[in-house]
Image (cartoon, rainbow, N blue to C red; front, side, top):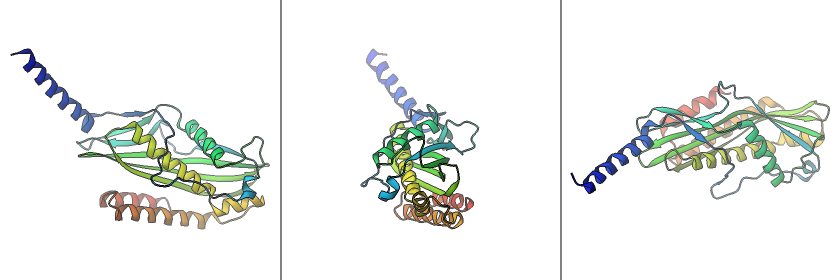
Length: 252
Protein backbone atom coordinates (compact mmCIF):
# COMPACT_ATOMS: atom_id res chain seq x y z
CA UNK A 1 0.00 0.00 0.00
CA UNK A 2 1.40 3.36 -1.01
CA UNK A 3 2.03 6.12 1.51
CA UNK A 4 -0.56 8.34 -0.17
CA UNK A 5 -3.22 5.63 0.10
CA UNK A 6 -2.43 5.05 3.78
CA UNK A 7 -2.74 8.77 4.42
CA UNK A 8 -6.11 8.94 2.64
CA UNK A 9 -7.49 6.02 4.69
CA UNK A 10 -6.23 7.55 7.92
CA UNK A 11 -7.87 10.86 6.98
CA UNK A 12 -11.20 9.15 6.32
CA UNK A 13 -11.15 7.28 9.64
CA UNK A 14 -10.12 10.46 11.44
CA UNK A 15 -13.03 12.37 9.93
CA UNK A 16 -15.49 9.65 10.89
CA UNK A 17 -14.17 9.60 14.46
CA UNK A 18 -14.41 13.38 14.71
CA UNK A 19 -17.99 13.33 13.40
CA UNK A 20 -18.96 10.57 15.84
CA UNK A 21 -17.51 12.58 18.71
CA UNK A 22 -19.35 15.72 17.69
CA UNK A 23 -22.63 13.92 17.03
CA UNK A 24 -22.94 11.48 19.90
CA UNK A 25 -19.95 10.43 21.96
CA UNK A 26 -19.40 13.57 24.00
CA UNK A 27 -19.44 12.76 27.73
CA UNK A 28 -19.55 16.35 28.96
CA UNK A 29 -18.96 19.92 27.85
CA UNK A 30 -17.21 22.57 29.95
CA UNK A 31 -18.04 26.20 29.18
CA UNK A 32 -15.60 28.97 30.19
CA UNK A 33 -18.26 31.47 31.26
CA UNK A 34 -18.10 34.78 29.43
CA UNK A 35 -20.68 37.54 29.08
CA UNK A 36 -21.44 37.79 25.35
CA UNK A 37 -25.00 39.05 24.82
CA UNK A 38 -26.17 39.04 21.20
CA UNK A 39 -29.84 39.94 21.76
CA UNK A 40 -30.99 39.40 18.20
CA UNK A 41 -32.14 42.56 16.46
CA UNK A 42 -32.70 44.64 19.61
CA UNK A 43 -30.84 45.39 22.81
CA UNK A 44 -32.36 44.44 26.15
CA UNK A 45 -32.66 47.30 28.61
CA UNK A 46 -34.74 48.17 31.66
CA UNK A 47 -37.08 51.18 31.67
CA UNK A 48 -36.07 52.78 34.98
CA UNK A 49 -37.69 55.97 36.34
CA UNK A 50 -35.32 58.77 37.48
CA UNK A 51 -36.59 58.56 41.09
CA UNK A 52 -35.37 54.97 41.26
CA UNK A 53 -31.96 55.82 39.79
CA UNK A 54 -31.43 58.44 42.49
CA UNK A 55 -31.58 55.83 45.27
CA UNK A 56 -28.44 53.83 45.99
CA UNK A 57 -28.80 50.05 45.83
CA UNK A 58 -26.70 47.07 46.80
CA UNK A 59 -27.35 44.05 44.56
CA UNK A 60 -26.69 40.61 46.03
CA UNK A 61 -26.89 37.39 44.01
CA UNK A 62 -27.66 34.14 45.83
CA UNK A 63 -27.89 30.52 44.70
CA UNK A 64 -31.35 28.96 44.90
CA UNK A 65 -30.86 26.16 42.36
CA UNK A 66 -30.45 23.30 44.90
CA UNK A 67 -28.04 21.31 42.72
CA UNK A 68 -25.71 18.55 43.88
CA UNK A 69 -23.07 20.03 41.57
CA UNK A 70 -23.34 23.85 41.45
CA UNK A 71 -21.20 23.93 38.29
CA UNK A 72 -23.85 22.13 36.22
CA UNK A 73 -25.51 24.65 33.90
CA UNK A 74 -27.29 22.45 31.39
CA UNK A 75 -27.39 19.39 29.21
CA UNK A 76 -26.78 18.44 25.60
CA UNK A 77 -27.51 15.58 23.21
CA UNK A 78 -25.49 13.94 20.48
CA UNK A 79 -26.63 12.19 17.33
CA UNK A 80 -27.57 9.11 19.33
CA UNK A 81 -29.72 11.23 21.68
CA UNK A 82 -27.54 10.40 24.69
CA UNK A 83 -27.56 13.19 27.26
CA UNK A 84 -24.35 14.70 28.55
CA UNK A 85 -23.94 17.41 31.23
CA UNK A 86 -22.78 20.94 30.49
CA UNK A 87 -20.59 22.46 33.21
CA UNK A 88 -19.31 25.94 33.92
CA UNK A 89 -15.57 26.35 34.42
CA UNK A 90 -15.94 28.48 37.57
CA UNK A 91 -18.39 29.72 40.23
CA UNK A 92 -21.73 30.41 38.51
CA UNK A 93 -23.11 32.76 41.19
CA UNK A 94 -19.91 34.83 41.25
CA UNK A 95 -20.18 35.13 37.46
CA UNK A 96 -23.82 36.27 37.66
CA UNK A 97 -22.92 38.77 40.41
CA UNK A 98 -20.20 40.30 38.23
CA UNK A 99 -22.48 40.46 35.22
CA UNK A 100 -25.49 42.09 36.92
CA UNK A 101 -23.13 44.63 38.50
CA UNK A 102 -21.71 45.47 35.07
CA UNK A 103 -25.17 45.63 33.47
CA UNK A 104 -26.47 47.79 36.33
CA UNK A 105 -23.66 50.25 35.68
CA UNK A 106 -24.60 50.26 32.00
CA UNK A 107 -28.20 51.10 32.99
CA UNK A 108 -27.07 53.90 35.38
CA UNK A 109 -28.03 52.16 38.62
CA UNK A 110 -26.51 53.89 41.63
CA UNK A 111 -24.72 50.89 43.12
CA UNK A 112 -23.17 51.60 46.51
CA UNK A 113 -22.47 50.00 49.89
CA UNK A 114 -24.02 50.78 52.31
CA UNK A 115 -27.13 51.58 50.31
CA UNK A 116 -30.68 52.84 50.78
CA UNK A 117 -32.07 49.71 49.09
CA UNK A 118 -30.88 46.09 48.96
CA UNK A 119 -31.90 43.97 45.98
CA UNK A 120 -31.49 40.23 46.51
CA UNK A 121 -31.55 38.08 43.38
CA UNK A 122 -31.95 34.40 44.22
CA UNK A 123 -30.97 32.44 41.12
CA UNK A 124 -33.46 29.60 40.75
CA UNK A 125 -32.47 28.61 37.22
CA UNK A 126 -29.42 29.17 35.03
CA UNK A 127 -29.72 26.49 32.39
CA UNK A 128 -28.98 25.71 28.77
CA UNK A 129 -30.33 22.84 26.67
CA UNK A 130 -28.47 21.93 23.49
CA UNK A 131 -30.52 19.75 21.14
CA UNK A 132 -28.26 18.31 18.44
CA UNK A 133 -29.72 18.30 14.93
CA UNK A 134 -28.52 16.94 11.59
CA UNK A 135 -26.98 20.27 10.53
CA UNK A 136 -26.13 21.77 13.91
CA UNK A 137 -27.76 22.36 17.26
CA UNK A 138 -30.69 24.26 18.73
CA UNK A 139 -29.67 26.11 21.90
CA UNK A 140 -32.34 27.09 24.43
CA UNK A 141 -31.49 28.88 27.67
CA UNK A 142 -33.47 30.13 30.64
CA UNK A 143 -32.50 32.27 33.63
CA UNK A 144 -34.87 32.85 36.54
CA UNK A 145 -34.60 35.07 39.60
CA UNK A 146 -36.71 35.22 42.74
CA UNK A 147 -36.16 38.76 43.99
CA UNK A 148 -36.53 40.67 47.25
CA UNK A 149 -36.17 44.43 47.58
CA UNK A 150 -35.38 45.59 51.13
CA UNK A 151 -34.72 48.88 52.86
CA UNK A 152 -31.50 49.67 54.72
CA UNK A 153 -32.95 48.15 57.93
CA UNK A 154 -33.59 44.82 56.20
CA UNK A 155 -37.37 45.21 55.95
CA UNK A 156 -38.84 43.51 52.86
CA UNK A 157 -40.62 46.01 50.62
CA UNK A 158 -41.57 43.74 47.70
CA UNK A 159 -40.86 40.34 46.23
CA UNK A 160 -41.50 38.52 42.99
CA UNK A 161 -39.85 36.74 40.09
CA UNK A 162 -38.25 37.62 36.77
CA UNK A 163 -37.13 35.38 33.95
CA UNK A 164 -35.41 35.52 30.58
CA UNK A 165 -35.02 33.08 27.69
CA UNK A 166 -33.01 32.85 24.50
CA UNK A 167 -32.92 30.46 21.53
CA UNK A 168 -30.49 30.08 18.67
CA UNK A 169 -29.31 27.65 16.01
CA UNK A 170 -25.57 27.09 15.76
CA UNK A 171 -22.79 24.56 15.34
CA UNK A 172 -22.84 21.56 17.65
CA UNK A 173 -21.25 21.66 21.10
CA UNK A 174 -20.17 25.29 20.82
CA UNK A 175 -19.09 27.11 23.98
CA UNK A 176 -19.56 30.39 22.12
CA UNK A 177 -23.22 29.64 21.43
CA UNK A 178 -23.71 28.52 25.04
CA UNK A 179 -22.32 31.82 26.33
CA UNK A 180 -24.37 33.87 23.88
CA UNK A 181 -27.78 32.43 24.77
CA UNK A 182 -27.02 32.31 28.51
CA UNK A 183 -25.93 35.97 28.39
CA UNK A 184 -29.07 36.99 26.50
CA UNK A 185 -31.31 35.15 28.96
CA UNK A 186 -29.45 36.59 31.95
CA UNK A 187 -29.73 40.16 30.71
CA UNK A 188 -33.42 39.76 29.88
CA UNK A 189 -34.18 38.24 33.30
CA UNK A 190 -32.46 41.12 35.09
CA UNK A 191 -34.25 43.68 32.93
CA UNK A 192 -37.59 42.05 33.74
CA UNK A 193 -36.82 42.18 37.47
CA UNK A 194 -35.92 45.87 37.37
CA UNK A 195 -38.90 46.71 35.17
CA UNK A 196 -41.33 45.08 37.61
CA UNK A 197 -43.84 47.80 38.59
CA UNK A 198 -44.35 46.43 42.10
CA UNK A 199 -40.61 46.45 42.69
CA UNK A 200 -40.22 49.97 41.30
CA UNK A 201 -43.05 51.35 43.45
CA UNK A 202 -41.64 49.80 46.62
CA UNK A 203 -38.09 50.83 45.74
CA UNK A 204 -39.07 54.49 45.33
CA UNK A 205 -41.63 54.75 48.15
CA UNK A 206 -39.69 52.74 50.71
CA UNK A 207 -42.86 51.11 51.99
CA UNK A 208 -44.15 47.52 51.57
CA UNK A 209 -46.48 47.20 48.60
CA UNK A 210 -47.85 44.84 46.00
CA UNK A 211 -49.29 41.36 45.88
CA UNK A 212 -46.59 38.74 45.14
CA UNK A 213 -49.23 36.12 44.34
CA UNK A 214 -50.78 38.06 41.47
CA UNK A 215 -47.31 38.95 40.18
CA UNK A 216 -46.38 35.26 39.94
CA UNK A 217 -49.49 34.60 37.81
CA UNK A 218 -48.50 37.40 35.42
CA UNK A 219 -45.02 35.94 35.10
CA UNK A 220 -46.43 32.50 34.28
CA UNK A 221 -48.71 33.96 31.63
CA UNK A 222 -45.79 35.83 30.10
CA UNK A 223 -43.68 32.65 29.92
CA UNK A 224 -46.54 30.74 28.27
CA UNK A 225 -47.01 33.48 25.69
CA UNK A 226 -43.31 33.37 24.81
CA UNK A 227 -43.47 29.60 24.50
CA UNK A 228 -46.47 29.83 22.15
CA UNK A 229 -44.54 32.33 20.03
CA UNK A 230 -41.55 30.00 19.75
CA UNK A 231 -43.79 27.16 18.55
CA UNK A 232 -45.49 29.40 15.96
CA UNK A 233 -42.07 30.41 14.62
CA UNK A 234 -41.03 26.72 14.42
CA UNK A 235 -38.06 27.36 16.71
CA UNK A 236 -39.05 24.42 18.92
CA UNK A 237 -40.80 21.13 18.21
CA UNK A 238 -44.25 20.19 19.50
CA UNK A 239 -42.63 17.70 21.87
CA UNK A 240 -40.30 20.38 23.27
CA UNK A 241 -43.27 22.75 23.58
CA UNK A 242 -45.35 20.24 25.54
CA UNK A 243 -42.44 19.42 27.87
CA UNK A 244 -41.67 23.08 28.60
CA UNK A 245 -45.32 23.98 29.05
CA UNK A 246 -45.70 21.25 31.65
CA UNK A 247 -42.63 22.60 33.52
CA UNK A 248 -44.04 26.14 33.55
CA UNK A 249 -47.44 25.02 34.84
CA UNK A 250 -45.74 22.91 37.50
CA UNK A 251 -43.97 26.05 38.82
CA UNK A 252 -47.30 27.83 39.46
